[in-house]
Length: 110
Ligand SMILES: [Cu+2]
Image (cartoon, protein in one colour):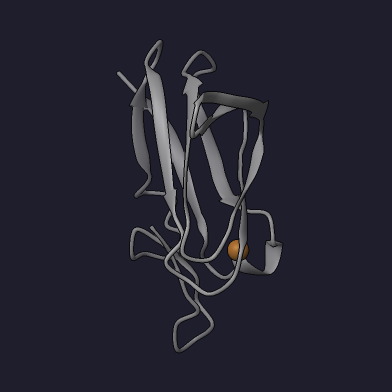
């Protein structure tokens, strides 16, 4: 859930500004779906490090990318293969949003 800006010009994912200890756990070899729900009035080009994802379109699979624009009030789903273990940021590529909290760590766990 992408939201903001808050009172301190903070931008959030799932209600929280970036905290490296509190990300999204995934497991290696999973096929992972990220659902970006834009609950704000600005667009957010959402980027995932370390992977490329396939954008899910109305008719199934769409283009393979590493950044997808999520328009205000819209939802975009992307799928990727978890084949690159580590901790990877996913963040808004309007960097002033990312730096103001709209980032999360996608973290491989055992
Ligand atoms: Cu943004």
